[in-house]
Length: 293
Image 1: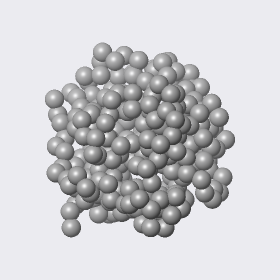
Image 2: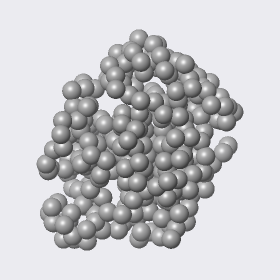
Image 3: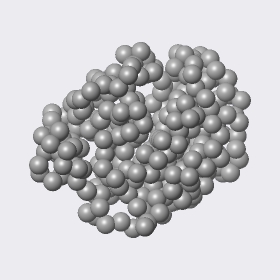
């Protein structure tokens, strides 16, 4: 089984405090990041959603109530029983590549563009011990995430509002930054700013993983073209993601293609390991590491 090596890191580097202004804005002065101070303070199932000025109406605001993640598309519903089933496949791939996620409680993970926080919720349910944080440009999506987070899932992680591509986190705040099916919603001219932000908030030696729809897969193109939430989507090939991350200063470890079989057919998931080199999977994953100074 192919496994990514966890880069060596200081146990203290993943708990770097945000700037004083951010601490004050969130009632802090303790020296701990606001996300960590909040993550265990509320009742189980309550998300710590940042209060603050809203950006211009986000594209996803209208889709947030009862968010279906495109499952209204008949073909997507045929291939997978639920949106969670698609996300769970990516999570299993991630845990195979980075098994330390299940044991390292000192690590911190950011889901950039988390939407309704499905990936974070599944990570919590799978026993991921690392500290989880999410952010999104849509306040309505963060509100939907809070509504969906059940008490049985444990304390909901902090969810923070982005200002465009920019997040409220300090430089080098996270050991792992995930971006799952986000970039195709970002206008191509704004993508360099996203790559730069991903690199900024990832600690030196930390990892970025970008999951995206693969436009070389005809089923992917068919589904995206007929899904309302993807009406403005501009699909991008893996080499574009690799170039963008390199230009932002990351060291790209390569691309692996996934989802060769429908998520409904979990028994065929082994194809993802065997065929990861073949650029025909429905999605792909690009991994990059932030170089140390």
